[in-house]
Image (cartoon, rainbow, N blue to C red):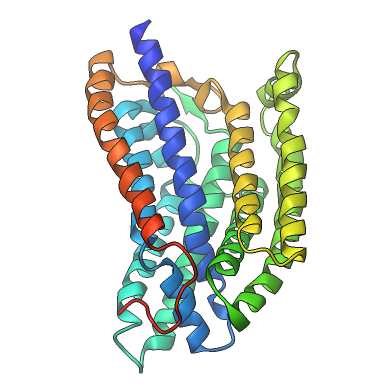
Length: 335
């Protein structure tokens, strides 16, 4: 019984780490996606300055989620990695290019366009591959005798491509609403205008993915529409509508903070929807949280360390955002 409780506690911790990564690094990647839509180098400079104090800390949560999966759900890790090798490797390469671009574009004039392209390209590849990996996981991974039994290209399907584009467009929406909140003047007005098409496109893609998801696995229908689970799952679409109205109304009224918070709410609600579809599996359609968990001793040992480190990570993340709160001064920045 203790092992069962520990495995579900750890599933919650990993889910929390992935969610925090998405809502923090999502707008970070979104800023990179918007680079080609800027008017001049000064706009690109101030856009990068808005995330330069926090971008690397945001990726801490990706390490926690991936490392936690390896440590406490080794069977799930052993199944997911062979199934998603290509999108995961491409995602990591994209994040590497972004990180290098952060350092190099400030130290060159001649090659700055190249590093601007690397920043945009890395953001695009990372966002697209995250969405594709999500879609491949939602559609299910073939498992036989506790090992991956699918093919090399099983991750590449129309549904996974749809989720890849949906996540990419959603990150661009997050980036635009973040810049609307952090910047002033011409660049703020420009980003507020860009937020409109990305917000509307995100809502369309959310609807398409939501309608298509129940057809990926028969169990999804039961988890969403069976009684009494329908009482809980029915609340999610209502909250999505309210968050959408808040987002669009905030943009129309030229608010700073509300559009960003409502955009983040859409991602949180989408994540909850995925959780409803998956539970109690960690790798659909057949690998459960309890089956994939490490021995009880490993779960307990790693949990003790995590309960010490997790508040520290949350603390320095909150402190960084607090220190760099408010509008970005275009005369100061990352050097």
